[in-house]
Image (cartoon, rainbow, N blue to C red; front, side, top):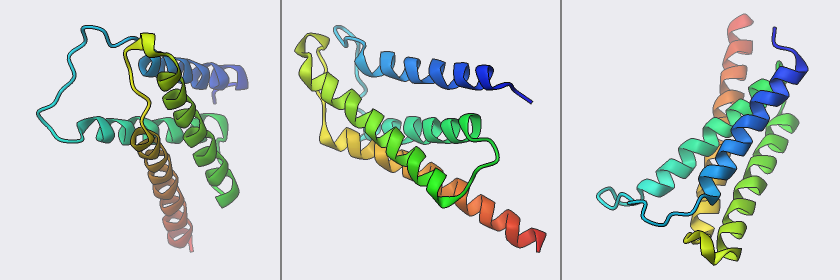
Length: 127
């Protein structure tokens, strides 16, 4: 079993990496335009992984509705903060978008719903 320090280190490293990815200047970085809304799909996927990681690493064994809701709220707030910071600092050559913040929240919620359903299925199977 992983100790508390290691779990916090994993969660912190992923959070820092997500912040760097969200706030790194985009000058000269090509953005894919071939697939419509690919950036929104990337936001959903990243924040689904983020929420699942936070839940599994920081709250091992806890899959109750209250914990799931707090993790979704935290991840959604973090994603919204990243969008606000993108909008606040034009030198980053990034734009903060409400649609991106919503995609972040959707990803976190999808992870929570998936984990919650898996928990329910496991309980039903156990009898």
